[in-house]
Length: 261
Image (cartoon, rainbow, N blue to C red; front, side, top):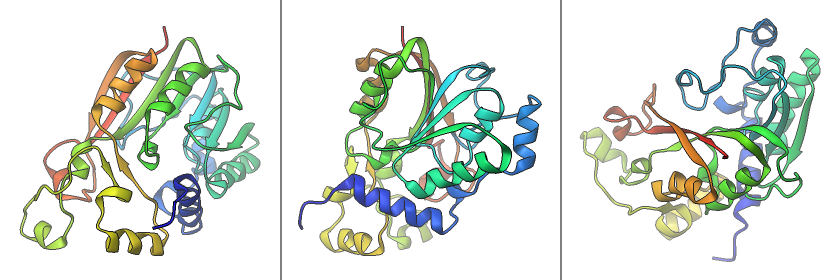
């Protein structure tokens, strides 16, 4: 197989998902923005609510919504009083944020790029980074944590979420799910480009689906510590609508709250 540009492939995949009005490309309503302006708001790293104390007040904070376009989180934070920059690979996803900002008179700075490279931003540019599940679309998550640490001010926080790597272990042949069986197949860390059989990978590429990577906890959590962060909060959450059999048996979402000393 010829060399594949993962960033460009996944960028195009998310442009298509946005055009299809997928779950993560459905902007919040004007009513949600109006409520946020009155102090009634919430944002999500996982399907459930944020743990108490993780994000109580954003008034005046410089917030980077990292790989988090789609018109959902950033407009709410802006309406709640934050100075928000949205950084995402997908132009179509960023367009959703632009539409909400235009509709509701919000100020959002929209930037297209690779989450592993935040060189457009100077050191200590942000007080808070909000990074909901998205780093499964890059082969190596450690550069993401290093860049997050660099662009945060001292005392700044990184709120991030990702999948428990157990999600990537099982064979996804429907026959096993129908029998209620979880058959381990893939070792971790996982990568579509190296672990899928060539025929399955070719079919996924032909369909234009995003390629995913199941990172180890050593890279997801340990990588934050190596970058210099201090972990202040850890949260697990269940999948409300299980996609895989494993989702029925343990919380498969993980969120962390980390601080730059």
